[in-house]
Image (tube, rainbow, N blue to C red; front, top):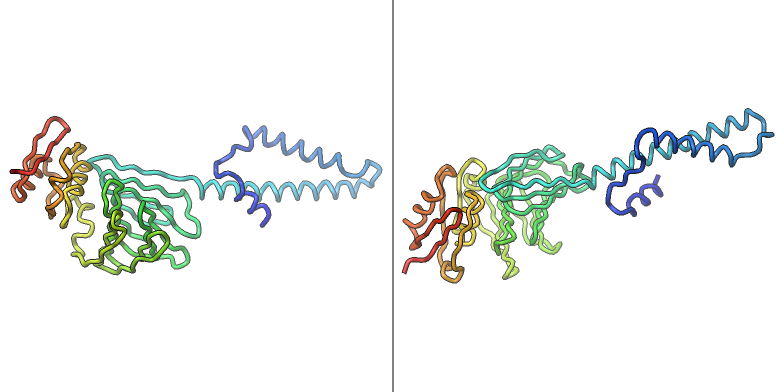
Length: 293
């Protein structure tokens, strides 16, 4: 069994169709038995002994076939990946194979196996809120482009857009460990937020309002001291628009915004421009934003 396990692990991780159909499987089964029978001793051997060897051969083939079928299906379940992509202006709640719950924000993408192994691992691009089923024997890990998050059972938010310099992990309940390049950065508990900068290769830890951690999952646009790049990406994902701006011109201000997703893009931009010195132009799905002189 150990040899068979090692052999399966050494194969390329792509499902292979062994038999064309059920009839083909039966034919191969019969041919193998006939071949085994032909290799046994000549017919002069007593019938009882031949029948005994036939039964042994059939039993061995059955055991190997059953073991192979089990390993093949188990291997296929653990290596078959499921990918979920959320469209602009949408969000999605889903259940993972271990019954953990995930809420995906607009523009997010998650990848996970159909069946978890010893470590429950998912890959995330974008923002998601996780409510993890406790299992001390099977840790849960979220892998992003820059950092990994390890948990046993807790609820937390991960914001990891590849177009943004910063990746954020915010804990609502329980505790998580955050790693970068397999090295531990810090351990977070409830109301802790870790912000990792890709350009600086450094992180900052702060406290946040527990009630605002996953407000987006209940229909709110919620930003706290965000740069303009994050504001623009949030609006692009929520309203399916493309925002053009000069990064050098807009890099100094920070934006704190809490409003309903039911507002139109024009209403949100009016709200932003009432607080910050910006002006905008809308043409179809193209929005240009400038800083007022």
